[in-house]
Image (cartoon, rainbow, N blue to C red):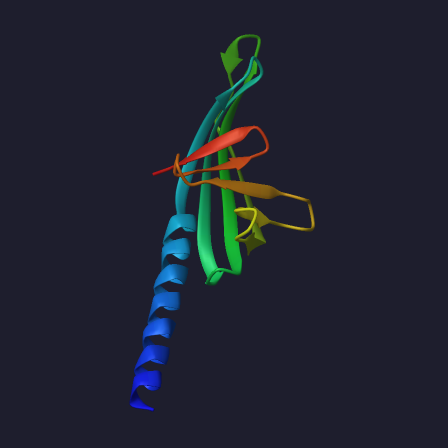
Length: 121
């Protein structure tokens, strides 16, 4: 009886440690810089835990300068926030309203959103 109780407690501790590693791997701040002939953008992606290994809050902050006649306009800002569900099998955070999908790239410590790669700070 005592052994089975100790075994069960060790199993629960091990599972909690695995979940904690996933949360630490996912949560944090990620950055991306992009440029085209029409604008320069600086993006920050913030991933926060709502329910560990299940639901996360994702905030995308963008600061950008429009380029018109080869001159930069004053910096403008946008903020978008959404909730995303974590899928361990696909290593992806998915949001259903607009179809946003963030692919975790664990070897690079980065997320990919469409064609943009966000690197962890």
